[in-house]
Image 1: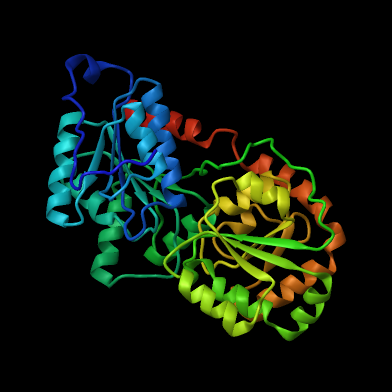
Image 2: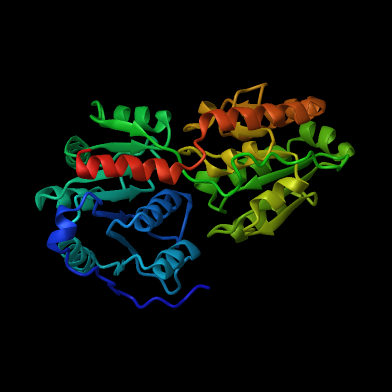
Length: 390
């Protein structure tokens, strides 16, 4: 159950005792830099890892934006007894709240979760100035840059980190290119997923192609406008409509109304908005192909979950997508996130639809090779090593 969360509330941990200070159990804090939306895929790894460390008996703190209602993952942390610091949007208030909680815990390591490599670097500046050991967890890097003085500040906080974690090698390389310098002590991690690791599903019985786009409705990132432009392509429509193609858009977000307007503009009655769905496996029991037209990404959970479920993926060549999707083997890769390239790739996919079941089996095998069974447990192990020096 979601519960109302008091703004600015700090469930500070009790002050660390001398026994805890000398214990081999690590004291680790997590700071989320997410803002603007209540939750996202960037939050899954730190939240699951915090819960894993707490279950192992280690003192943990989780600091994130104050919200009217706690998202389910935060509520699970609270119910497990993990101290939460719900900080105010005001920078001054947030800093005071978070550092009060850190002083109580005396963490050996602070993990700063970054939905984007430029978001949250101020937290790391403050941690560095105050002598706390920290590690960024980066989910996305793209071509965005700040003014040069700020970019130098970003580079310095990466230089001072005990480790820098990236969810894909592509994001690591992109961040280094934008900073124009190597990032020391960089490591790769994987996000937890919401389907079984070995949960490959039977192929759907539907004779007509059923495609799903599973992504929050935030078109500048996820590219729903690109997808709808591609589906309106005359050559693609001439192929898709006689086949009875159905496209389902799963997810919610700030641009719901715009996506609805585009559906009307392009006159696509065979494309439906399905809303937010918690049962990801349920999506893949009914659909045969994931379509993800993103403009930029880290390594999307939607791709991992579709592949583990035994479904091929059609995606754009951004972020870490091609680190897991092999064009022509486990899916189809569009060369760019634009309507023309996506339409060409969709036409190719529909022309090769007889291969989809075999590609789905290859996708499941590929995903199991690339994804650990328990990403949060592995990350907890690594953070323990960094925190304790073991």
